[in-house]
Length: 125
Image (cartoon, rainbow, N blue to C red; front, side, top):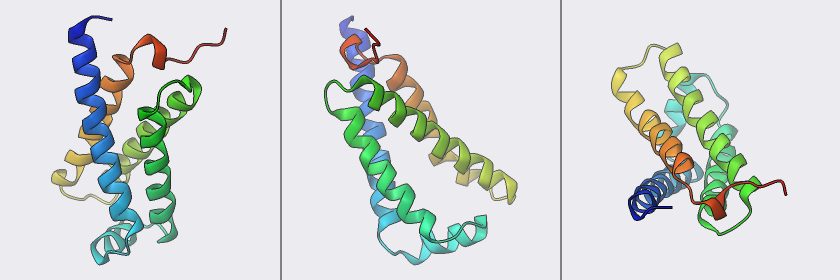
C-alpha cells in the first residue's frame, strides 16, 4: 500500500469514525430534535437507540485491527443506514440540506472501504 493510499484511508476513516460516533451519541441521548426528526420520517423512537448503538459498535469494528469480516459488516451497515437516511428524507420531501450529512458519510464509508489496507480486508483463507 502506498503512502498516499494510507493517508487517504486514515483521513477518510477517522472522519467517518468521528461522524458516526457523534451521530451515534446524539441518537442515544434523548434529544428533542432527534425525536422530532424521527417522527417526521415516520419511524418509532426506539430506532434511535438501535442506530446509536450500531453506529458506535461499527466505529469500534472499523478502527480495531484485524477482524476483516466484522469490518465488512460494519461498512455495509454504515452504507445501509446512511442510504436509508437519504431515502427517508427524500420520501417525506425534506429540504436538500438534510441530505448533506448522510451523503457525506456514504462517501467517507466508500473511500475508507476502498482504500483499506490488506490487513484490514476480509480473507477467507
